Length: 454
Image (cartoon, rainbow, N blue to C red):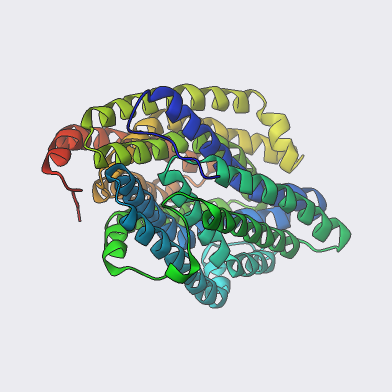
């Protein structure tokens, strides 16, 4: 647990893969928490409970993504400090990040408990699903302090190239989550409250495991309880990178809430099908996203060390490896989509509708490679506002416009799905042009300081 990867010397290709694969597996395992929830309630509590769990995904994303974005700021600052050999700044960033995670999680818990009924009502959730959706959301939000703590702890480990430790913690908590799901639902007769409680307990375990590992490590990222405080200067650096990314995530989630509301208006079968397909497509997304995060960390360390030529090489390798690995997994999911969707629900209509979503989403991923890779590349230099602005305008703007115009005239599930390749294609084109114009590997490294786009 005390190892770190040398990102600024030697080969890059094998190290990027070694970094990205555990990171992708970690993302997949996190999603399996929700997948396990859906599978258990889908088989033992019915479509209504399954729809209640799935309909909450965009809401949870909206509340979490601001702080997940801030954790990305922690990753960049710590990685840059590692490249510069600045152990004091590393320590300050680590301890500041832990406090921000706990306080942010507590804020979301307290505010979310009161707002949950109104938030679910805004989603146009059917009457037979509404009480279950509120119950699930309120219990889930109670675990936000430990959920956010895990994300910040993972960012700390990633900054020094260690993606294995967060994965190991999630393997343990993931197994626990499945066992508790079955115990609460089958053993105690609970429904969505059982799977939500299991998820909270599992996240508590994973965050505790990582906290213990950070206290034991001999690296500069070591946590010492007596040093836990907010360092204003470092917090400012983290927020300048993290807030644009977090706001992007929040607006992205808001757009998904509007889309989820449109999905909900089409009935329980479509809601269940969309939830099931999402829990399959996300596997491919996490693989693609892991190479984007790898690009951020590798560029961050090499930028801190002043090695601009390795930054551009990192981008090329991340894009190539992302395309090959994500395409392979996506094809497998499509080929076996019927039995995979059947894991969540065996209703033929649910399976047929779920396949429609998978086909459109995987087509849209053809454009996501550029968007994810180039965004990760720019953020490695601390350029956070530009990719955030591109995504907000290109993805969120297009999707919201589509739902309020095209979908209103042709309210079908296919109409909703068509906006995904359109919005991602526009965003990929814009961010490619912007990256070519900005050229951070030359302009910003030469200036010797992280460019702040805000």
